[in-house]
Amino acid sequence: MKPWQYLIGGLAVIGIAIQLIPNELPVVETNNPDDLIGSGVVEGEVAGILKSACYDCHSNETKYPWYSYVAPVSWLVAKDIREGREELNFSTWQQYDMMEKLEKLDDIAIEVGEGEMPMKIYTYIHSEAKLTDAQRQLIITWTEATMDVVAEEEETEESVE
Ligand code: HEC
Image (cartoon, rainbow, N blue to C red; front, side, top):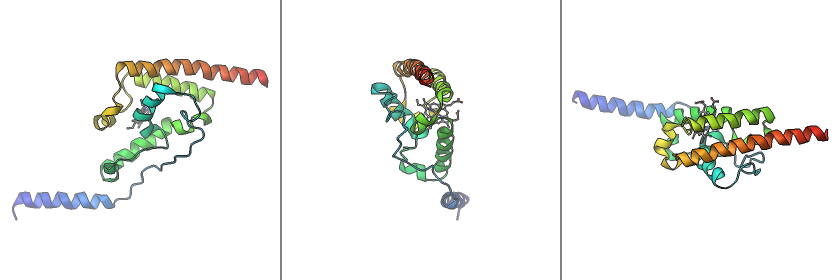
């Protein structure tokens, strides 16, 4: 065999061997009564944008494409989704208290405004998740309006007590 044949053979062996390394993709749960969209906190176009650009990493309803099962991509996908859900999980939105909701809405406006989210590695593959300036502005306007609603809800709850 020629040296390059050994090299290709070696790479193929490594490519197969890494498939055997255990890796758990975060589980998918489709029944989420506290979901942001499900409970009507956001509707229409903004809901559609969040669903197509954020829900794969920031909800329990991740849609895994076939290559997300293939190492080493699967390791990166698992890590991003685990960390993404930890930071912000739209599926459990109503379980956040008022301060958490306000903080998260503020963070969303910052991340989306600065173009940090959705992650570049994601929009590179999912071109439909690339946001236009107008879509970014829509999200920011929604976060501002929702922060007012969240703060008001808290006030009414307090006055009832
Ligand atoms: C490919 C997966 C992925 C997608 C898609 C994605 N995110 Fe994230 N997001 C992450 C990960 C991972 C983190 C935690 C690490 C970090 O902050 O970079 C994160 C963090 C965040 C944070 C917390 C940032 C902080 O440091 O306070 C916010 C807010 C956020 N994302 C909003 C969004 C929004 C809004 C969208 C859709 C427009 C979105 N993300 C799309 C993976 C993703």
